[in-house]
Length: 195
Image (cartoon, rainbow, N blue to C red; front, top):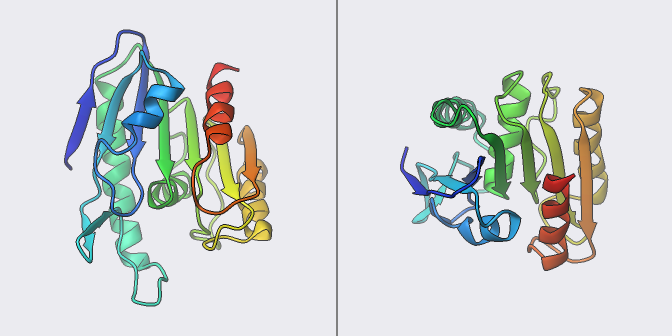
């Protein structure tokens, strides 16, 4: 999979998964807010939808292609594992926005003990609702907007409950707007990483 890397000068690695239409380096600006001295590695989705990059296919009605999701979940998981091997002394954070957050939830439901210390899922949608979150040692933060068209407040609560039911340390941040990222959200996620 195509990657973009920016080498930092501390022992923190942030792996980044973009939203629909993004690129491998799309979340580097968010990385600068979270930890400007960290090393960044962005992974680019391989699926094209109307010229926009994604991590898995969806149907014309917006529903997820579960076969594609399963296949691409394994690919992205293996990519993360391979990246982590190159940074054995680093604290590992993975962040995903929208489609990137969705593939992360799929990874956490498919594989146990994903080798990352922290995960921030910005504006995930309901994914694999029939599957439970697997056992993880990762600290997870979930964020959402109350007016987000892709997930209702109750669905977001259900997602947080799914992580907590697996005994995953889970923090939640919501704001009153929609699918966009707010400065307050980024500041909250920076505080989450510093806790």
